[in-house]
Amino acid sequence: MILAAGSSSRLGQPKQLLHFKGRTLIENVVAMGAELSDDIFVILGSNHKKIAQKISDSAAHLCYFQDWELGMGSTISFGIQQILNKDRYTKEVLILLCDQLHVSSQMLSELIYFHNQSDHIITACGYDKSYGAPALFDRKVFLDLLNLSDEHGAKKVIQKHFKNTQIIAYPEAQIDIDKPKDLALLK
Image (cartoon, rainbow, N blue to C red; front, side, top):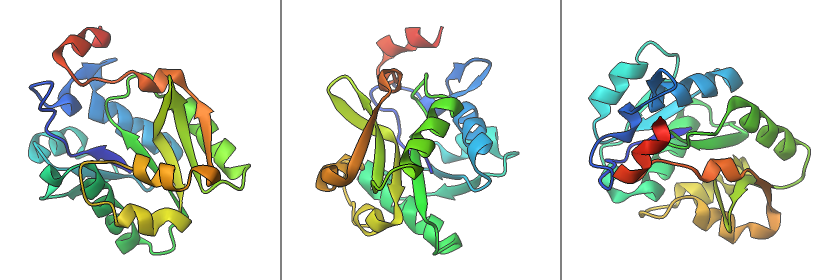
């Protein structure tokens, strides 16, 4: 599941439409996801029509969340519900953000491999002194993801199940685009 619903208010423009490596950030992350799965859900909110135009030719399921302003937690909850509406037997969900410039399909493949080789119910990226997306969640925590309802993302679920979470060091996942000064990272 790719989260692309935010308004990028700190940046002042839709980050999903910024160009990096010859394509928009949303096109890059959808292409990366397509290398790993045939079932990609993109959760859209602010600027959803403009963003959807960029990926309308992809096989991704485009889901518009009209209450995107409620925050990332609500967006994740909506996305999990959309996935379960399509296939209630879904075993796991990988949550991706579109603005993590150095996340690669190889990194995601490794994350999935480590998850499948362990008994952990969550596998998340670790960077600096934190952790988070990309992160893979087993269906055992879907109810917790469905119950997210505010601006806080899945980190709350990771913290709740930390003893059953494995953190894989991927410091490059920390680099993202949030503020105008971050635009230099796109060059």
